[in-house]
Length: 367
Image 1 (spheres, rainbow, N blue to C red):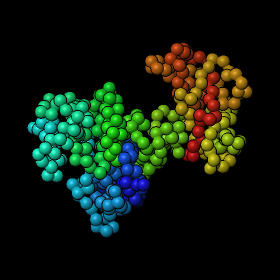
Image 2 (cartoon, helix red, strand yellow):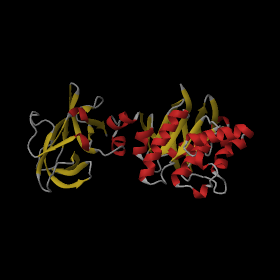
Image 3 (cartoon, one colour):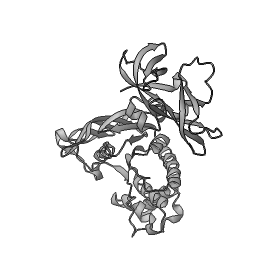
Image 4 (cartoon, rainbow, N blue to C red):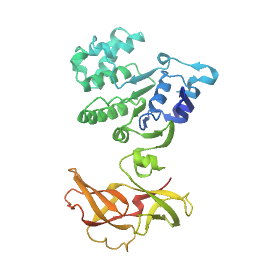
């Protein structure tokens, strides 16, 4: 059952159409991430849910209560929506102790005495800061300040917690640690959460569902594995992870797979390749063949047992050793593919090679 409902949300800033008829439902206790490039509308959507922006159209409901409906002149202020927010800048008050920062929202809601202390300390213990209750914010590390901001947002038990790129100011190692902490806390507390980021690793690691956005619209909503392995279009495939996208012509379906024709430039003939998907494509349609680098096999000899199907001859352009794997760029006529090989392998620049793949791990996507 939907706990946060966004229906046909529309928001403009002058001539800029930031959000275009967006609809989304978030279940109680669910962690949903809005993911997309800068300017895609994800932060504007979050700010409309928070009440920091007034929508131009549509409706927003939280736990059955309508909090924004411009057609009816309805707009609840942020303080009347019972939500928590964690910002990129932490917004931790330096003149207050850790305890007072976290207790602030409770005091505003007139919680006092023993209950104030108990709830504040319980929240600090939850985020691992109970021992720093009397320390001032100026003496905290970036990760500790972010935990204070999180504790302050959940201490008064909001209906929804909204995250606006909260980890972007942290270094890579601390960001990874905080991802794990946020995921643990969200599962333990069970608060419905909407998280905004442009970092795909964050989105895939933390979310129950990912909402991929572009130009104010939703491109796909799915769990992280589906978003990565079964993108619905070329934009999602290219934005999530690394993808080789080759323009192709749809030839025909053949049982569970389809046949594509991929031009490789003169004088090489087009490659006839097989992939999954393409259920809604017709013969002659322009499509994309999506190949993930880790799903491609690289060999110095023609692969055995495939009869040439999904095997293409090429030449190594360059290689980069990345520790966990070897990343190779391979030229196939006028095309180039990024291929991941085992880190023990070695390929020389200019070496003749063969690239092959299982059609089950290749996707035909509409253009």
